[in-house]
Image (cartoon, rainbow, N blue to C red):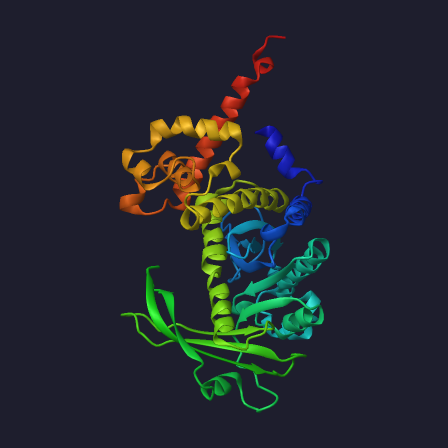
Length: 410
């Protein structure tokens, strides 16, 4: 443990250095793919969350109130064309200076490069370098917080693709009307069935109308395509879903518009789920480190574990029978088969194929205290993390027991 804390506090260790080698691995992996395995493009879902450390000795800066203490953690999750998480090439830690609190009105006086919103640009820069190395482009996906004219102009200038949820009611230069006025006058392109989440997180299949067009907004150097999705079948005690998306990808028919709506909707299964894993599974708020340097190093290490667990859980939900041998080493797989006899219940074995990713997730869940898929659904992040942590301890013990020289007397 002392060695681990020395590692976290070492001045030569940083999130930037860790992610640099991680990005290199992602580039080499994609470059090694050929034929049908080689993707046409990948997606990078960017989002931010708060790391809250109120009442702690470590001084980080304010969050939303003057006396908050914490850091803004910005993440970029890379997925393949089927939205399976592949890695975490982007992570930034943004500390808000307490002297800047209450001075939002002055932000317009600063150049874009000095604003907090410039954090979104790192994903575009990663995308440019990644495409040069691999020949595979990246489509960036953002929530409404990234509806920023400077960001759009940066992407358009460097030919980077994006899908962003609209936040501002900008004016169209051609019609001289604002965005919502233009949308109201558009004909409905078609109806589609979409799964809509209610306030409890349950999915409901509902009919939605789609409209799309191309508009040239003031402050933005090129026209953007606009996709508007309006739910028309209500959910009881729930406000109807209404999204307006902006993109520089071509939208000339209903199929293309529906596809980009689906792309944007995948944010919930990537960014939101990843942040849940970080906070409830990896428990980043409970880490007792008293310097920002050590804390940020620890969060990055935990984040790389979290993205691997996110990928495994996603595969368990979408490719349940895929072999777990692509995830576990031979030693880990052999140990998991032994643990299967102790932890999995007979009902679990009827719900999954032995040696599959679903089998692994159910095993980790049982080891972490989950009470079973049939009655309680897929294991949550707390039980998955607890099970994974215990499993890794057993793997370490097994590896040490196989290393005979470790136990030999000097």
